Image (cartoon, rainbow, N blue to C red; front, side, top):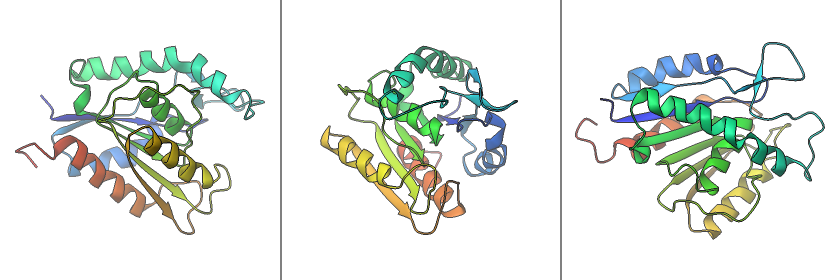
Length: 207
């Protein structure tokens, strides 16, 4: 039995396989942790082959929240399949979510809505776009990582999310990476790895 589970959540138009290099690296760094990167449930509606958690076609500040809510059932089914396959149905406190862009939006929504009381969330280049009220499990820890040169997801979204999450009693770390655009970097990944080790393995004799 693994000591923890990390579920990677890709961005819009991508696939779970986009995390393959990262999974290969982390399997060496986290040998006692199960890792999985599912595909989002819906085909990307702006290009072939990609997947999406919700459509960004015609998305606005006014309708984004309702699209997130509409995506919850399919998102939950995807996560539930990952958790069940790995044997963590009754051990969500040993599960961490690592999202990028739209994957981060859904990961944060899973937590603030109270549906997924996991150990921690790493949100790369994301935003908190979920509708209130927020009913999170306070023990869930959050790491926000965002480049200050991101042309797709404004860096201000990270500070805004950190402020809101902190105001509702959550433990939040927000790191703004200078000169980084909408991507993963070695330094950001290293921070994420350290965070995951802390939230999943800090009390484990195997670390």
